[in-house]
Length: 328
Image: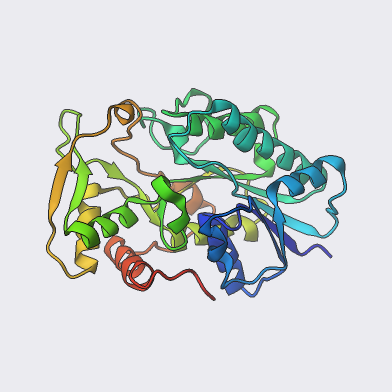
C-alpha cells in the first residue's frame, strides 16, 4: 500500500508548512528532502513529525541510478528550488530549478506517483498579460528575472511534453508567514517591516517610478502561509486535478496597507519613509500582482482566506514577537 509522501524543500518555508498541514491531518509518514547545511532552516521542522530526512543530492542520485525505492511513494510535493529573484547565475538556476524538476517529474510519471510542484507568480512578469492560470497565455509570458524564467521553462516543458495535465503546478504569489526566518533577503516584507519598526520605529518603502502610482501604492497579492498550504493540499486530496493553478487570495494590497497592518499589530501609529529604489531593481520590479483564483475555486476550493489584517496580526503576535515556529 502506497502511503509515503515526499516533500522536497521540506525544511524550507512553504515545504515545512506542507509538513505542518499534513501533520494536522494525522499524516506523519513523510520523507523530507532538502539541502542540508549550516543554516537555521532545520529549526522549521523541529516541532513537526516525519520519518526520514534525506539530502537533496543523495535523493536525486537515488532517483537517477534506480536505487531509490518508489513502491511505497504516493505523492511528491516538489517545493525545493532556489527562490531568489535576484540570482544571476543562470546555469545554477537551470540545474537546480529546471533540470532537477524534470528528473523528479519523469520519476513520478514513470512510477504513477502524484506530482505537485511549485511554479511561481514571477512567471507573469510585469502582469501586462494578466494573471490568468488558464494555460492559454503560458507560452507568451515574459518573466522579469532569471528565477521566473527557470520556473516558466519547466511549466513549458511539462506542457510541451503533454504531461502537465497529469501533475499540478502551483503558482504561488507573495507568501508570508512563520518559518521564513532563514530566507535572508528573500524574506517577506512583513518581516522586514517588523524589524525596521523594532530597530528605528519606522518603515521604509520604495518610491514609485510609474505614472499614476504614488509612493507605497505598489500592490501585491499577499497570501498567508496557512492559506497557501491549505490551497496546496486540495491537489493532494484530489488527484484528478491537473494543470497550473494560482495560489493567492485574489485581492491585492498596497505596501502602505502592509506597513500599516504591521504597525497596527504592534499597537503603534504608522511612520513611513519613502526611499529610492536600487537601480538594479527598477527594470524587474512588479508594480501590481493579483491572482485570478477562479480556476481553483471552480476546482473545489471554497474556503475563504484569512482577513488581511487578521493574518498579519496573527503572524506578528504569535510568531514574530516570540520568534516561534509552526508546531502541531
